[in-house]
Length: 176
Image 1 (cartoon, rainbow, N blue to C red):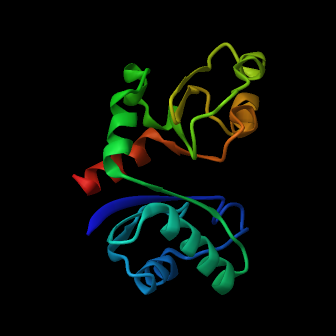
Image 2 (cartoon, helix red, strand yellow; image 1 turned 60 degrees about the horizontal axis):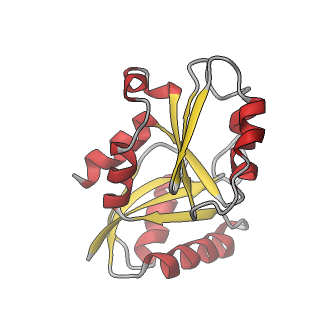
């Protein structure tokens, strides 16, 4: 069995796409996942499985659709890839305030990212870098009203889901 990290996009946000973590754990168990742990309500799970990542992601999405009536994007990641993304963090000083540093995990490497559009939306306090399948955003003033943060996925041209640095570190701690 291999350990995997699943990142769910757009669940339990402002009362929409509700998926209680207890029920997510049960659903993943039904799909053959073992030792399932979830972290906070926004859709982060660590588990062991024999299933291939792409097929498992599609099955999870379909089963959530069947049971809950919506189909979230699910990225299934190898912990080594997440560790490499964390190690490549271009903003090590920002880790002192982990809520200010965000990593957008990209479903694929962007073929033609529109970095100029993001630069145009960037406030003076924000900075960003794209590295392979990760987009790093340092936003000391938060991302709640950030125009840059709101445009990342469109500018990348590939599905993405963001996690703050604290969440990235917690998930990596769990996979040890």
